[in-house]
Image 1 (spheres, each protein chain N blue to C red):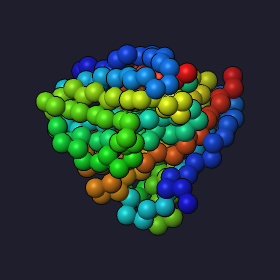
Image 2: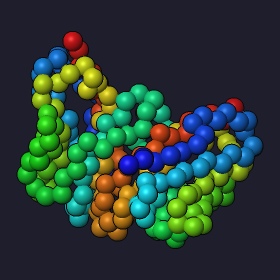
Image 3: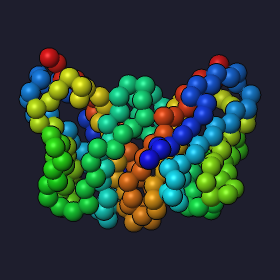
Length: 114
Length: 110
């Protein structure tokens, strides 16, 4: 069974530029999550989708971050404009459903904002 | 008060010893508990899940849950240098997001 796919693996941009990350979850997983992990901290949930609907985006900085999962499968996370403090690893995870299910993570995208 | 607390470590143990990793959580209605292992530069990998009080064993790993004390632990028997990593505790309540601790760094010396 293929795991969660993410691209790109690394991205370096200058502040105020925009960037987009892509995620393809495990086949059959209805729930998709985007996390931000800053060095030395645990992952922090940015947004959770159940199929193509948003379940939780309470910690998403909506003035600069946006995410979509139009067909209930792939998802993109966008940052525009980026700030220095956005430098982090962005992790995508998926689970079969959302209620206490085990989540499986992709390899992540390491973003550096200069 | 942090929702999920872990000692950041590092926790140093010799090869072959038992490593004991601890986690406390603040939400009394939490019902799903997970341990993830994260190697440096890699993404978290699920190693154990536990949902009811008591012990759950899987190979060299044992998860222990005490809901009355709001405490979950992970024991690693016969620790190996390859177990050296950061171990993340994660907790979720009904209809709530998964919340991670900051992780405990484990170092197993040969």
